[in-house]
Image: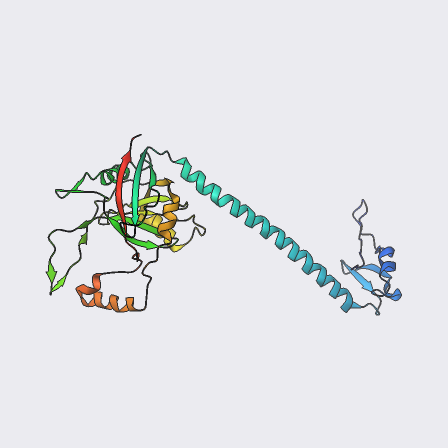
Length: 316
């Protein structure tokens, strides 16, 4: 496809050459597309503007058609190249940024968790080894280590993560393990047995600039009145503006990362869970009415038993 090319030159004084140079080889190569009568053109200066004048027999529709096709091809090519370049840059940069940010924090301690999925006769998945950032969150890491070693004292009781279960698994968002429950002194309200209540943590004053972006990130709630469970991010974050990412950054403080056993994390992320249903609206209504039976929230609870069978702090 060929179109005539108009060339406007300038003299040294800056005046405009009033002529149009047409590539005659293009005219000869496409005699059917551009008739002989349409080969001549001239430029004239009218009211300070340079205009291209042509004969009345000029096939404007054909010319505009060629021009639109060429413009569309050029635009799609430029967008495709820039989009591919941008996508490649983003896809290549995001994992590198994720890994570099995670590796920037120094691992001061290591903890080992053996997770049991299903019944006691099922084979155990590989243990999870956590690297803890003792310099980035000293108070939170110390509390976490005490729970791992079954020596955290709260209200005259010694607490730990051993034999605690997974409280919530939201696929591709978060895995919550280590909810410590109070099993003694259970009471009955209106003949309905109450479930063991969750023990609340005193919180931590630690803050750091680490964020939930990389698969295997470990964090705990930093506000007082929350539970002792810790959260594992199962996959790399694709959307930095996702709601769950903002909630994790606001509510939790990053204390470490998984350095071994990501296959076990992926296994936990794939466990079937109790997803939200329309019946949850009725449960919310029951909670508003004060029905104790509606206090049990089964949403995102794993449908297979997941518990911490063994945990300990590895020697440095």
